[in-house]
Length: 162
Ligand SMILES: [Zn+2]
Image 1 (cartoon, rainbow, N blue to C red):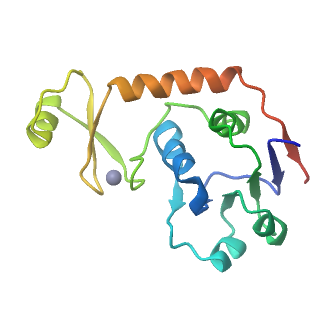
Image 2 (image 1 turned 120 degrees about the vertical axis):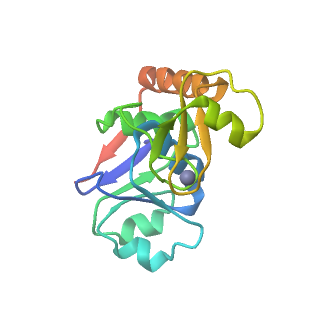
């Protein structure tokens, strides 16, 4: 069994991620700044018809789709990230808010500390312009770096069915 099946020309102008892949939606935003549409309320009909690139675990949806679609068949999260690295996405080139997909702007860490109400041991801090959440380089960020390093070493078997 392959790890994933790809059909159509994947483009990264907009990516619909189905409701079973919330973790991946957050990763695509924070690691790649990808324009991800993700919501538990996305309707099957909308996912079936959109011209955006659709990422799904649903075999029936994959079969019904005409536009570009990636079917993920593995539970291995590292391989999920590896599949996108293989498509040419560059990690950490840009970033979006993992929660809402909003743009992150760099702010002073003093501002972030005042907002979150505790000390932040980081020299770089960001605020999401859409939801107002703050982010900084901390243990979570180092975890993301390790994830990408692991994904870069991982082979993912993604079958392109054209
Ligand atoms: Zn946000």
